Image 1: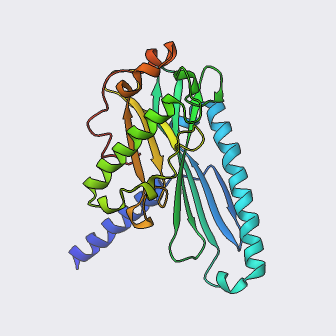
Image 2 (image 1 turned 60 degrees about the horizontal axis):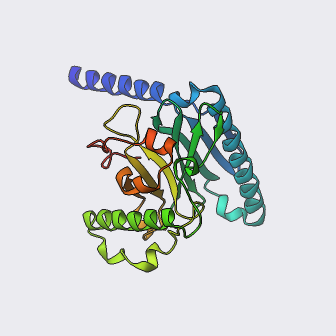
Length: 257
């Protein structure tokens, strides 16, 4: 009996610790139609301008989905008998390069009572000096649609995706049909971040993030393609040459990004 009591007490302590460790959402919407949350990681909260930017975007997302959930519940109330939709968005910092360029991952979870929940991934590239979002354009001498830089990026992305698919034993979907959404255009090539590097303050290249369905069936999940900076070296501006260097850290490819 004493052993059982100790076990119960330990389980209760662990449960309390787990609950205490759960982060508090930075914004929420909770109605009969939806329970939705926004989380900013602590590093983002340390930058007031970046935090405000992410939170403003996140609140718009909450409001949009809350309105859609309310309309759906009004139209088909039977689909809400077991509760409302469940939505969550998390903003996390992936890298900080040259103490200026901050890459943020934006991960979404969405359960609208369909066959399965869905997820999405997008990115934010933040310029701390200018306190605004930017693209990767300043790092390259040209980024025209179907131009040489974009074509080289697409080829490198597809090569990386094929390697990833081989690792997962899903090479049968490494086809032009699945890769057709990766287009040589800044707006259509994929959500991009500056990859961390073994060299302090530098980026080892670009990582492109693809949600389920983007470059493979839902069951394959997300993909991350890596393009080393050396591949892009001929197309770098002076600023690009300044921030890129080193190699991709050993564990970066295996870690959730």
